[in-house]
Image (cartoon, rainbow, N blue to C red; front, top):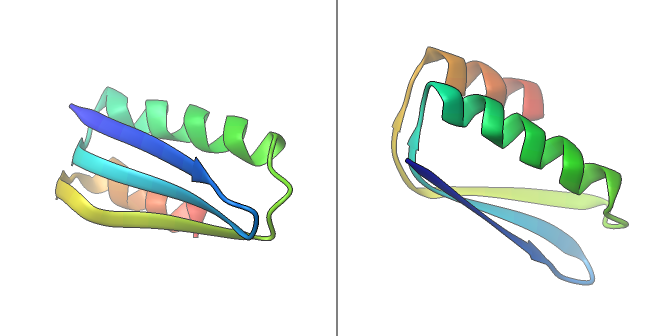
Length: 67
């Protein structure tokens, strides 16, 4: 399971990820990411990974693409 929390402040859009970034959750992160980027005015996006307990190969690839 993966929890994705978005915090849209005046300067930075923060995505906080918690749990396991694997399998179908990788696709869910991509959808969430693209949706949030369409609606944001911030120039800075921060992805907080401190709550992530596991990342599979697809998750690593997704994070690399987001970077």
